Length: 345
Image: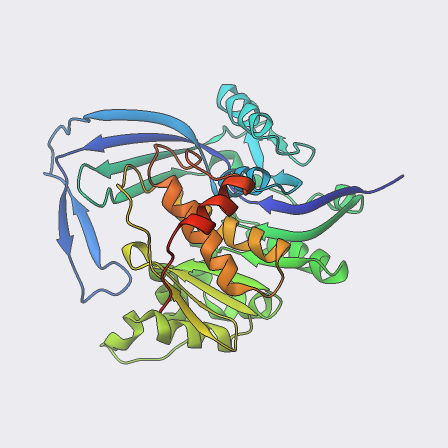
């Protein structure tokens, strides 16, 4: 029996997103806390009005797989949904984006995952996500199905539940045995586990993808400081060097309005963001990471080109509502790159 062939497989979360926009929130700057440098506050006990609400599909595997397909890659998604109406809606979204659904699992006990995303009506459209993982927590690595699969890359996003370590280990073992390249965007559970648990996987990772807060949290797990954490840990260049020493071939750190930083062991590169009116920042990290890896599939080793793809896709996503609104197709990607001034420093 011939194997099912893909360019890439996305693994991780798939949820329904419910976005609420409110003008009532206030930002509190807390620079002394490097892992939570800005807080979003609301009046205690108050009823908060939402000026707008938007429902869409999200989750790391869902968002990235949609981008991969749009960029011309044959893509499958390994996710777990509830056997419910939300699960059907999420599954239909995979079909809509032409993501292969052979690896989708359905849980008979847990309901589908849901995210409540609270966005402020401010210039940067910053948001806070309240995530209910639901069926995502029971995601399993389907050993028998993966014996029938051939793929160039696998892209791992957040893994939830009590058995995530087992699942992660199985994925990396399979990838190593089959010489599959791994891109990895660790989730909350993985970051909380820290370097001690993750180091053996980091050494097998081709691309590690983190936002700056995540990079700080992961770095802190492997460094020893006194009560006061040094301020230089807030600098992406320092974080790149720390994380590169832990084993991944390429370290990518996104940093919001400051763009993204990348280190492949030879060159550190910084790409500045494009000037776009921000509508919604949901899914921007997934958009960047997926486009970055897509470029590496088409152009192996060309990190600068990958940064171009990442900045184009992420800056397009922020101009529309939802984590998958605004993702760019391959032809449009090449067209925009040829016409857009992208600044590197």
